[in-house]
Image 1: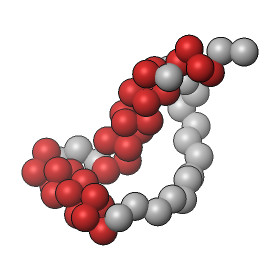
Image 2: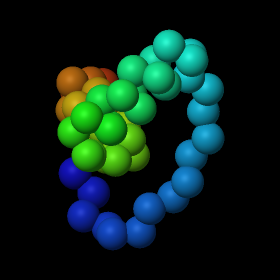
Image 3: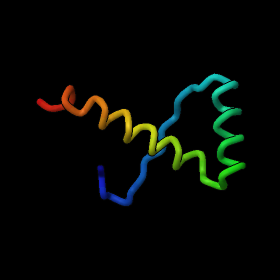
Image 4: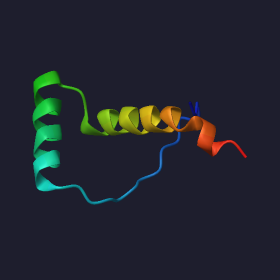
Amino acid sequence: MDTNPRLTSVVFRLSREKLDALKDLSRSTRIRQSEYLREAISDLLAKYEERLVD
């Protein structure tokens, strides 16, 4: 995983249903939505890591 502490903003679209579920999860766990999104992206990249190798 990238150890660089600098973060870049990203804009994307998400269905209202998924956004509401993410907000509910974030509220109930007190973990920021952005943390969940970073975790999900890291998991996805790890899953497809072999496809990323040149």
